[in-house]
Length: 164
Image (cartoon, rainbow, N blue to C red; front, side, top):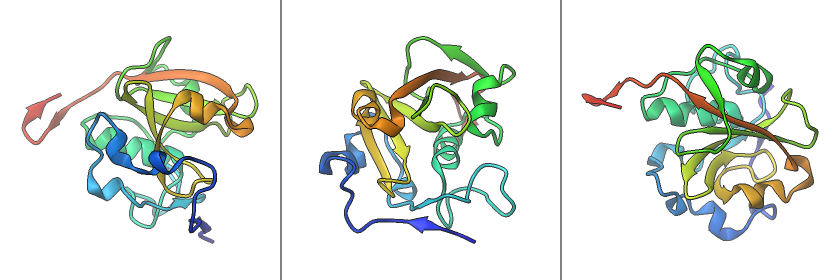
């Protein structure tokens, strides 16, 4: 059963966070207004892209793929354990992934994409739609208080004829 959670207002973030133009990287129009849907996760039956909504992982990976990165259908703990297509990094750069959680463990962690200038694009259940926030703003919430770490995709291909 699909469970879309899209509140009419988003009391869990500032109004500025909902303006995706805040991102230093262009967030294509198809990434705006995507509803959070818990069961639309990477690798779920029938899930591809953002049509019908996404969870945080599906949303983050779709954004990376839009920009030419190759990443598998990894859940949070699989992403954190992965050493074949991602590397752990100490300081995030644009297009790196961040994992945060209410507990200091990767299983079930929230996944965000760094868009530069200490800003992160993410789709959270509590906000219900995409937001751009600083990591400090995200981690101020008790359910995201633990930084698991940052991961960088190793593989980037060609997008619209331009090598990335």
